[in-house]
Length: 100
Image 1: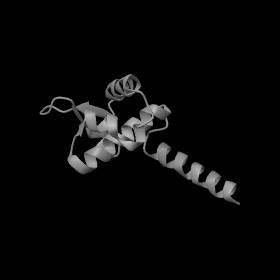
Image 2: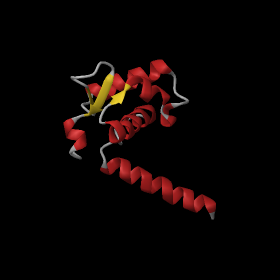
Image 3: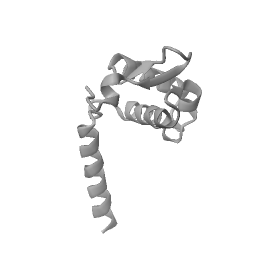
Image 4: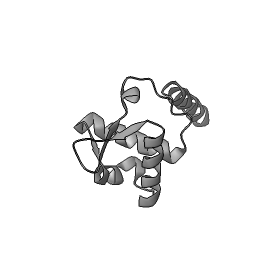
């Protein structure tokens, strides 16, 4: 019974990721994106140090997180803050719900 609930939950989560345009991201990229998104919801931008300390990426190595951030920038999911060094925000297309 618990397995069925977990399967249903995973399928729902997968559908939500597809709907949000996250299905083309790796697991690490998705976790980093969600960490940045969470921080942006709280503080408008996500500072690198806060991303590195976020619970979603706690088990991921520093270099791997930075590679994921770079890939997210290239894919226009996030962008560097123009006003703050070492800070990121969701790309305009992302915050409007039109993820690529």
